Image (cartoon, rainbow, N blue to C red; front, top):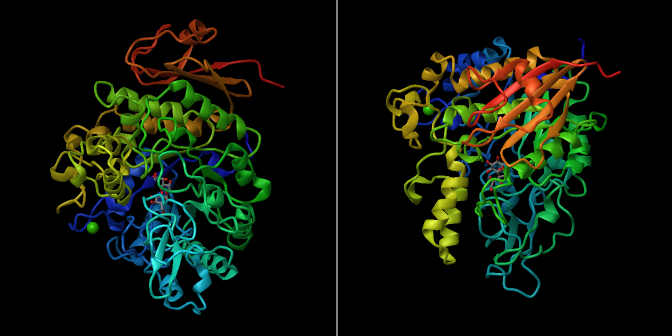
Length: 569
Ligand code: ISL
Ligand code: CA
C-alpha cells in the first residue's frame, strides 16, 4: 500500500540530554564525543531522529537552556568539529539530528543582552522586555515590578537593573531574559541563526516554549490564584496574538524552498487541541507537531507540586481527545518522558515488582497511538525515579528554588521534598545507565549527578543481552511502526472510557484492525472489550508476556491483536 504522508509519520525520535548521556573525557559530564561513541545503541533500537538538548555555550544556570552563543558548542560538551562529526556519523546510520532551539529567551550573558542592558539608548535595548517600575512605586522595592507575574522557577518574572532603574522580563530564571519578538531585528537574527544550522547539516529543531514568544500588549497583571503570592501571567504570554504569524514567518524565512527532509516540533505548555490543529495544519506551514502537556498534568493539581494519584479514565480521556482532535488535520507527538518529567515507569507504572512489565506496557500504549513517538534516554531500559535522600541531592534550579521559597513561606520541608521526589525534573537527569561497572559506565570520573543505585540491575548492556528486556520490546514497537501501516496511519477509536484499569483502543486502516488492551494494575482483569474472546484467540501481534493468551490479562499485561476486517469503502 502506498501512503502519501510526511516522512516523520513513520519516524521515532530519541531525546538525548547530553550532560547525562555519556562522558568521553572523565570530567563527569556527558559530551558530544560520548554521544557519537554510543550511536550504535540508538541504531540498534531503530530510531530515526535524535533530538539533542542544548549543547551551546552557556553559563549552565538551567543546564544549557540559557544560551550565551547560538552558533558554537560549549567546551563542556566539545567543539563544533565534534558536532559535525556526530551529525556525519548519525547520517551514516540513517539518523537525523534535531537541535534544541531556545529563542524565547537567551542567557543574560549573551552579547545581545549584555549590549541591551548597557544603556537605555542601546540599539539592542528593545531586543528584550525593559519596563519602568509600577507607577507610584519605588523602583527596586517589593511590589514595584511592572506586572505581578510569578516565574516558572519561583519569584517574580521581573529583575531590577539598578544601573538603568528599569526591570527586564524573565519568564524563567533571572539569567534567562525574554527576547522581544515584536522587534523584527530579533526575528531576523533568529532566522539567520536557524539557517546557519541547517546549512551545517542538521535536520530540524525542537523549539523550546515556542508558544511563549508572542506577548499580549500592554503587559498587564494576572489573576492571583488562591493561596499564591504572585499573579498568573500566562494569559498574556501563552499563544499570544502574533504566535501564528511568527511561526508562519519563521517557516517561510527558514524552511520554505529548502531541499531536504526536516522536522519541527514546538514545545507548547498550555496549548489546547484547538490551537494545535492550527499550529500543525500542513496548509498553514507553521510547525510539524507540538508537545502538549495535558496528559502529563493529570496527576497534578493547581501546581505541579500538588501531586494527585493517577486516575486512568482522566488520562485516557485526555490522550483520546488529542487523538480525535488531530485525526483529520495536523499531527500528534507522543511522549511520556523528557528531561523535565519524572520517569514514567515510576509515575504511571509500577517500578517495583512489575517494573519490566509495566515499562513495556507504557511503551506499547504510547507507540500504538497515532503520532510521532519520542523516547527519552533510559526510557528504553525502564529507568526509574531516583532515591533522593535530601534537598542537597536536588540540583535542578526549579527544585532548589521551589524548596527555598516554599519552606520560607512555611511549608513543611518533608512535604516539599516528597513532591520533589515525585515530580522533580532531577529524576530525568541522573546519568544514563550503560553497564554494571562503577558509575554505570557513564564516566571514568566523578559524575556531575549521582547515578541511580539500581544501575547494577537496570542497564543497557544487560538489556541488550536479554531478548525479553524493555529495550527489545521498544525495538519491536519501533519496528512495528515501519512494518504495519495501521500503526502509523490507521484511525484510532478509544474503548472502555470509564474502565478504571484497562486502557483499550482500536486502530484501523483498510482491511486491517488492531486492538490494544493494557491492564494498568497489579491484579488480573478481564477486559470488557466487545468480542474479546474472539480477539484473544486470534493473532497476537505483540505483547509483554511471552505466553499471553486467554480472556484474562495478567497484572500489567499489554497485548496488541490484529485481524482482517471488511475494508471500509
Ligand atoms: O518542567 C517545567 C516546570 O514546571 C515546565 O514548566 C518547563 O519549564 C516548561 O515545560 C518549559 O520547558 C522548557 O523551557 C525551560 C527549561 O527549563 C526546560 O528544561 C525546557 O524543556 C526554560 O528554557
Ligand atoms: Ca565530559
